[in-house]
Amino acid sequence: MAEQDRSLWDRDAIREGIDLITATLPRGSAGAYQIQASIAAVHDEASTYEATDWQQIVALYGVLLRLDNNPVVALNHAVAVSMLDGPEAGLDLLRLLESDARINGDRRFHAVRAHLLEMTGDTAGARDEYETAAQHATNQQQQRYLHRQIARLNEQG
Image (tube, rainbow, N blue to C red; front, side):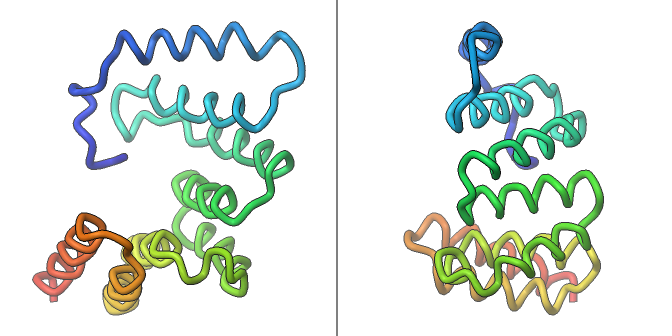
């Protein structure tokens, strides 16, 4: 999301979505879909990536984990935690997922770990993880993106 051009986002559709989730939440207990929509709304409300309310997103992922404890939600929670508390905190949460066969062979797991390792300054580890992610990528667009990350790291040394 950091690389997205938010000026291209459809602000009318975003406003409609935010209005819908705002109206829906007070009507009763929220389910997984309402929490996912709330997370999207928090992202959408931020005018820039840097302005994202990571504390609120971490809290919402905590609720979502209680409702739908699956490894993709846990992976997204780790990303949010890393944005709030730093990459080491996110890496700590990823270590809990390493043995989960439902996610540890997925390109997203390795791409997230690569990004967090890069944030800590571990360029070699990040490169290795991007390479593993590229091997697990299921389409050419994903592979191209991951190979661009590897090339960028190779240029840095």
